[in-house]
Length: 375
Image 1 (cartoon, rainbow, N blue to C red):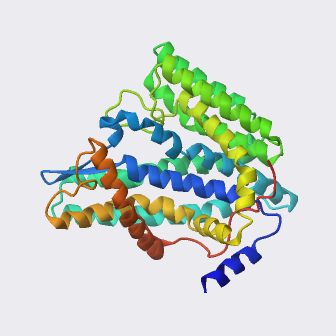
Image 2: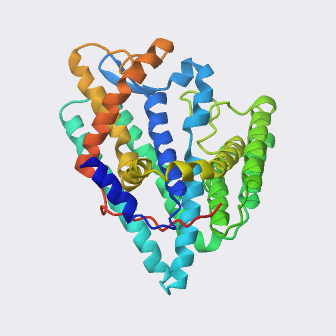
Image 3: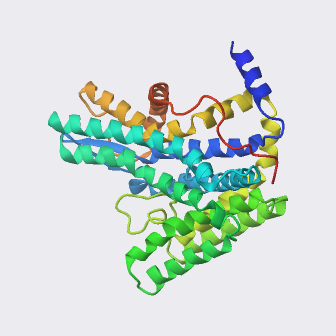
């Protein structure tokens, strides 16, 4: 049964589809999910659940965030796919409104379901007497990652305008905002300009990739080495945090809003992604490997929207044990917590599978635009 399904998926894939692009998106989603599961801790304390992070007590784990913070790769692939899709729509005389509506409809239907379910859950919890601080912490945990979808939707809508924008311009905007914030004592609110400018950098790189402007391994190496060197310099000499994810209680976050260090690190990730294309294409020529990537891509939105709910569900069920379970309810203050949390990952994955079976969104066939061989 399974070998036959693998064969059918492989046979149904167009010969000119660039499977490596789909693999990059799957890896980006996987990094986000695993990162949230490892750096988010729900601590049960006197009837209240609060959210903290192991990075607060174990800063030496910061290098893990360099691997698990994969949003730049997601925006790189998103820019490539959106720019190619829009160009194809124009060639077929498909209007902008129809093109954008098609891309946005599935996204916002899926988001609406998450918002509705958690609005109901929060209402029921409060009605049953749950602590309001706990309800707020859980709802925020589920809803806060949705910020990136709003940014992604805005950049997608602006694709016809930004598709030919050179990435150096939004990168310069990020640098200028940080100079005003940190160097000139400007207002903190100006940093939120970087929510758009910071993620526009990899998005514009993706659009350039769609126009075949990133051919050759030289571009990949320049982005990887240049971005890594710039990030190291900013962390060592300019005082930026080493962690590429937010840490509760930290004076400065590289992600909320994005900083120049985050943008530089994103360039390095994009370079690594471009360099991985050839090996990925060789790997995904194997039908079994491609079937896994195709399955993740078909469920990418469901996985992203419900992975926090899965973790919360396992944590809530664990409370039935009547005591704080290591790695699930305890303070993340040492290597023992990390080892225990790793042991809980299969339970999180099982809960996510249950969420997927219940809330999987959209059609059961590939919906992403054809990513032709490039790069």
